[in-house]
Image (tube, rainbow, N blue to C red; front, side, top):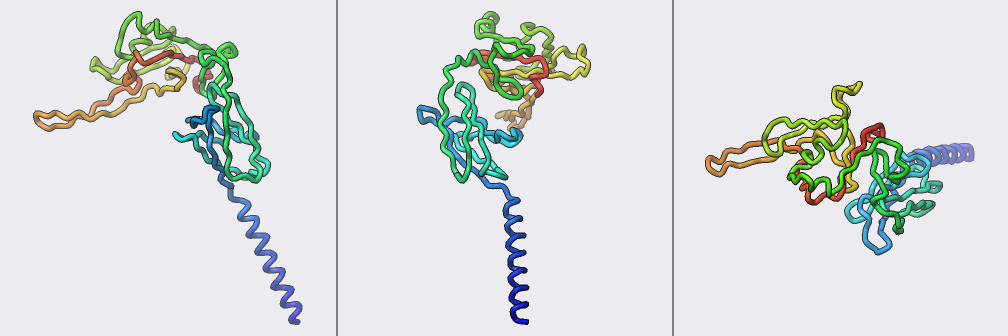
Amino acid sequence: MRKMFNLRKSLIALAFCLIGGGAFSAYADIIKGQINGSDGAPVIGATVVLKSDRSIGTTSDMEGQFSINLDDPQNAVLVFSYLGFQTQEVSVGSKKALNVTLQESGIDLDDMVVIGYGTVKRRDLTGALSSISPKEITIAPTNNVMEALQGRISGLDITQSSGQIGAGTSVSLRGARSIYGNNSPLIVIDGVIQPTNTLVNELQVNTADHSVEITANDQLEQINPADIESIDILKDAASTA
């Protein structure tokens, strides 16, 4: 009888171990790491995705560090990429921390285009793309990015909400002529995707009567056109992917 009781206790303990093991395996492991360039400097904003499921990913922070949750790190392969660097694949295995060094690709950044779902070579891009160079911006000097685009991009409608400096602007592609009538282009300034139709609230204090006024200014208009090297505007499905 005692042997049967001990056997039952052993089976119950084994069952709890199996259940507990299954529960723990359901939790994802956190893999951390550091991404540097060949010069040792941290790579900020590098993309890290799981090769087998690119919906699982993250980006490196201001110090080049990243963390990602993986269900099966033993068989996981991470893909590291950044504009101007060679794409690198790293097997995780049993490692909990990864140190990755990206090598420069040697490709001229002017030959690369940032689109809605990544970066491609300009010559491989089949979508509708318009570009404005610094020379074109300086032809008609302006302190407003949106004014620099006005009339230079076919099908691009830019409407200012008021005559106030920095007032919000509405940007639409083909406007009411589009089937949907609410298309917004993808505007990329110096390789960085910029939000369109986005307002930024600013506080203005009147020192005379100490009154406070909140004004909504367009975010794009906060950029100094003199600091811009290039402007790319994507006008098809690549801009919304």
